[in-house]
Length: 363
Ligand code: CP3
Image (spheres, rainbow, N blue to C red):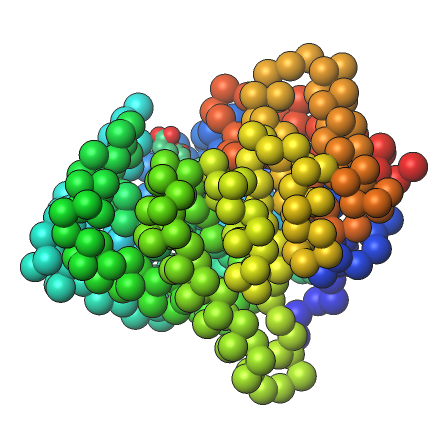
């Protein structure tokens, strides 16, 4: 038996139901800015060893919740677990970010890929979800996540992070069939991965399309959006056909960076919420999507480098912008940053942000 949820603000906001105060969580809320995270990572030996150990993954998931009054937990893992399980060999070089031993650059490379088995190759992720749900004991809901097919493909083709995405854009231009084959396997894997996380106990699901915004509009509509649509369709259909008393719909959040131009299109996918970065005013975003989806965001993460007074001011500005665009109501807003936190951020500033979201939105 799972404990009843003590704080359902986040899930209520995703359903656009009234809440007593605006819920808040932060992308990358577990990470190197916390000394206790650095201690656990040292104990594990590396980031990957920590992520692959369900008890340590649970420990770092809970660390930010012990410090801050957050309304959701997010599974501690990484988006690159899928290509790693496909056999590409993920590793991290200190200061250089993620890398793959093998890349996907030809039709033959793409043809070799298949959807990993979720309860064997990615069992450690599902085990982490189960352990975290047990340890959370109903305190707040747990978010599961995946990268988008396009964002995963960026790392798989480039072999790591990239500034110009030269190789994958060349593939889009010169060999679109191969790229579509890669994106298609990725989409099937993402659907299986998110479904397995949901079945293991994740109570909301977020897709990170971190690199959607590097595409031209025509390319975004060819190489990213249709695969997000496939995910929304598959998860929506699953929920509709699932049997039993527990078969409630697990909400889907589509986060994109630099993709505010496609807000209407994203809202039309059937996703429950759209995550937005700080390049769009929340008031404008809510006017453009009015009533169709919840919105999550969207403070510039760099706001956390400001002094507490500046953080308070910016939090209030974002909350007011959403409310004013939404006809005076705060319903349907999940407060977050517009992208993830950085290692050099001050934990005390995070407390200021979280507490101000609650205090100001309760008025
Ligand atoms: O939000 C959370 O607290 C949950 C954990 C989480 C991580 N990665 C942990 C992590 C989530 C949701 C991710 C997603 C992720 N990973 C994305 C999409 C979101 C985004 O930020 O755009 C991307 C693009 C990745 C790929 C990746 N993994 C990068 C670019 C890095 C950083 C490399 C570096 O050295 O800074 C990682 C590693 C990683 N994933 C870290 C964390 C906390 C840092 C690892 C460490 O401890 O050194």
